[in-house]
Length: 262
Image (cartoon, rainbow, N blue to C red):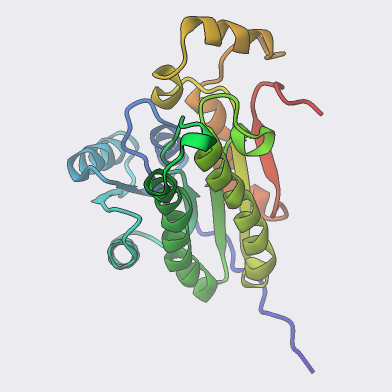
């Protein structure tokens, strides 16, 4: 007879979330890290820029009174990721949350995509997410509690057409399937896995490639009548990481201002 898995652990008052790609000044990851710290989470900031990670972690710790840690890590490097996650586990409170936010875009049309460009995008957006998620999920499984959120994109659902094309859209679509599979496999360990698919959000990624004319066209497609902010996305991520979202798993939240209403 197969015995049922033990029940999920209680949500701890002191808990940690890893947020990847959080060092960018105007990015979703940074806004999410700040939101979580304000809600009492300890935050581990992962990004390529060690100094920027350290500065953000110090600021969050000073402003919100929670222990935080900034680690410069290339998530494409499996061993470096393992070392970083082990460091988080040894220094901060129990690891409960993971936000897979780190990613790179690619505006290259499909017929012009080189193998090197395809690999560059997949290595970060998909392989890097795999490395961090596996290392973090193993710790979560031991403690029977975890919240994983993958940051996908509206481009994954509609097939590009905003600023990310084939390589970007394909890699972000893969994250949706990855989260759903994690939801099935890790649910017995008390771990949920969900996705957030932002649409037109005012970040550096969007702000650079898009002309004022293109932004005007996008606004016409948005029922809410404005471009989204990083806090619009961060609030949804924070909810999915919270104790209130324990019965949500394998779902995708479209944070797009209604632009893709079915």
